Amino acid sequence: MKVLLLKDPKTKDLASDPYVKELSSHGLQATLIPVLSFKFVSLDHFFDKLSHPESYAGLIFTSPRAVEAVKLCLQKPAHKEAWKDHLCAKWNSKPVYVVGKATASLVEEIGLSSEGEGSGNAEKLAECICSKGLSYSAPILFPCGSLKKEVLPKKLQEKNVPLETITVYQTGPHPAIQVSLSDYFTKEGVPASIVFFSPSGLKYCLLFLKDLPSDQLNQIKFAAIGPTTAEAMAEEGIPVSCTAQNPTPQDLAIGIKQIGMQ
Image 1: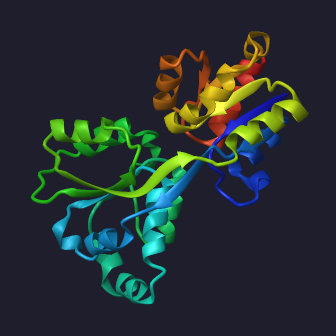
Image 2: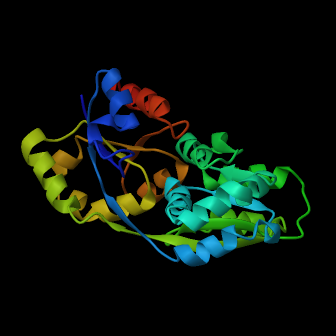
């Protein structure tokens, strides 16, 4: 059973991506096509903020790229030294909230402890933060992408949790996406399932998918990595056959196998 994963890879070797490996271990023929490209921006300004943990009540990371922005800041020797010397410890005295295991793992690599990884999406993370019932004299710092949803900021605002956002990366379509999709369908034929991992990934693939003949399109069962992506798919008229219970390779594999038996 062929499964096409439309996502940004976790490693340069696409075959070693955890989603590809997990689906393959279940006997599924998984192929990954990168659909997004990222450009990091305002990193000096971002590090200025990271250099003043006393001005914030904590940190929020909702994507691996936001943590990668910190890693890029720390490539400068002076920044790295300051981080090791005192900044990391000061941030660790405050809550660091994350969505997902991949983001939590990267946060650990920069020396920070995190909470909320099991929340699965920004909305549930916001609920987790608000449920703590803390009062804030300073905002939580939220490095994010140019296409961030307003769900988390809105929910926090409703509960009077102050937030300061800074855009640290811009998201765009992968330059080879149309060619890669065309090559896949030419060589591999129509996959049994296609999985979307983000609303932006869906956006950049729609043009190709809507050009497919209806008899091919009707053969495909579409899956979403989470509820936000599922909602975006439904809005575009893409039928959602399954949504992973949690955004993990294991839960996606379970969902794909279930719809494969239908």
